[in-house]
Image 1 (cartoon, rainbow, N blue to C red):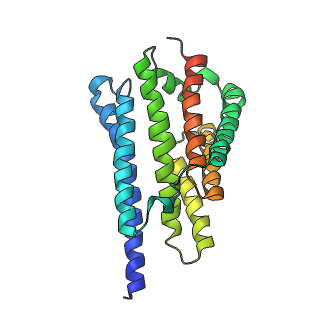
Image 2: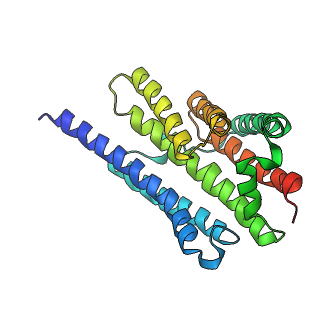
Image 3: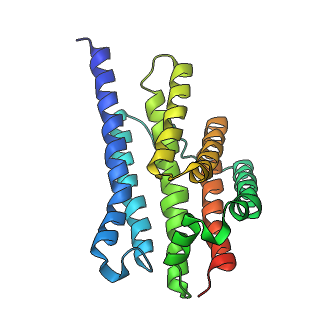
Length: 236
């Protein structure tokens, strides 16, 4: 076996094992609190602990994988933020938020939608709960998911192909499918709810080569969505 094939084999194993362990790290704290019900289960300050666990463990995993690959964080789009990328992310996140809350959610059940019911069930009137929920949405979702699902997944998979155009196309499609299926959509509406923003975040990353716009868009949407659900649907 040639050195080139050995190198490719190692890259494949490194990429696939990082994706597998990363996925486990995302779901592990949810399973732990959901099953044990310790300190109230999936609620309150535990949401902050979940976010903290996700960003710390996934970052260590990706950092280890990048080092083994001989890459830096900038290779997966983690760069100094540029104002134009921040503004682009704000615009994209705000547009999807407006579509979701002014049209899609009201026209598909509003307060009776399963996702709204699930979100409301986590909420209460305490500042700690709102802070923790926002932390989970922004840190666990907006930041950690973008680093893992957009930056590492796409650049890591793209690198496995000699033909970079083929690599980026397949990596983009695989990243979108992985992200959507990982959120366990239960019907057509929930699939659309996840698919559209996933395409938006992916397009932002591919177009700019930076994680900044997708992180900003994802974080802005998650944070404001939690607040809007609280204002519009929480009856506590």
